[in-house]
Amino acid sequence: MVEARTLHPISGQLRSEAALVSIPAGYRAPMVVQIKDVAKYANTSPSTVSQVLNGRPTTIRVSEATRKRVLKAASTLGYRANPIAQSLRTRRTATIGIVFQGMQDNAQRIEALHLRANEAGYQLLLAISGAKAERQEHEIERLLHLKIDGLAILSPSLEQVKQPTLSSLVKQKFPLVGIGPLLVEGADNVDWDRVRAYKQITKHLLQRGCTRFLFYGHADTPGVKMRIEGIKEALAEAGRGDLRLARSDLDTRKGIKQHLASDWPNAVICSTDQLAAQVMQAAAESGRSIPDEMAVTGCSDLEFSALLTVPLTTIRMPHVELASAALSRLIDTIENPSSRNEPQHTLLPAEVVIRKSSEYRAP
Image (tube, rainbow, N blue to C red; front, side, top):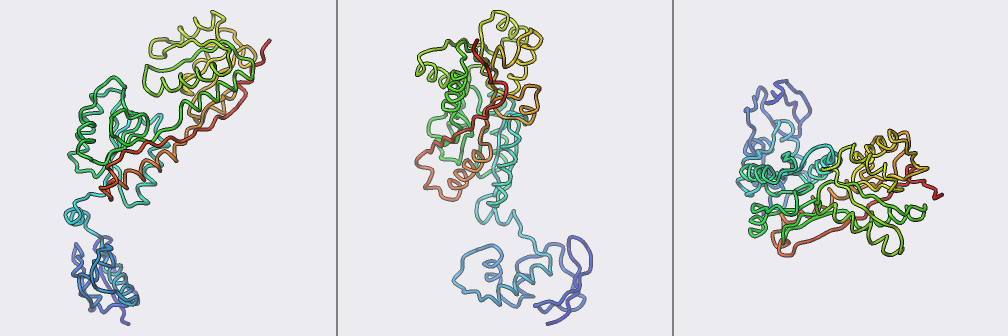
């Protein structure tokens, strides 16, 4: 046991500690500490150090005493693994690309993806594409040039837009997963069960006595179509209730007020909490009382949803579970190429959160 005084290559500070390794007094660590340096002062071979530090398999059996000596030497010298050297050796960069439209609806998923990736030893490269398919294609190409190991697409673009890059990646069996309704044949995807969730929320409104339904949503995306399908299934099973559709990309708040003025809906089912908040504001300006005269529901369970003057009934999506399932599948296809042969489609349940906005009472 000797007293080791070393100059840390990163901090530049002298450190003095009882060491399990023999380091000459006055030794100055190189700016980049390599495995051979650790091996020298741990009095062992570079292959043993590589096995201990990088999990690299060898035929050498490493004793616990040697392992501790290697770890102590690496800590004392300030050894850091070289990611470039590792990527050249493994042909991987331990990097996953994430393409998403924007932070507003994806913050929770991005955070969950980041935590899950860190746990598995991967880093993320994020690319914001907006809603245009052309921009999404551009961002995917940019990430591919950065040599990512796999790619996840959040909230994929419109159904009718062709996605040649994604189709090409599927044919090449490149690790790819969609979080949402990724409509590329042969691709993996993880999604939440929109049909079931909207069926449940419609059944709840039917039980409250609602009969005239207005669905207020964005353009005809696959996700919106699934929401409408759930509403229609609930109405068909109940044998009552009428449904009209309004597109938020066409109807402004003026359009909302026109629907409300017709005295048509006594229930407005929205595709997002933001749209539901707009409906509630327009209803207040139109003199419609919520929930006495009309029920309103949203989707996402954003932070403000429970804090509105009339707390919003909504659908809480399983963001963390979606991210975890998607990353697990993506990492599996990266590390086990044989698992790419059969695409997987995972559907997770969402939770209907009942609040005051849906407490309509039929006259």
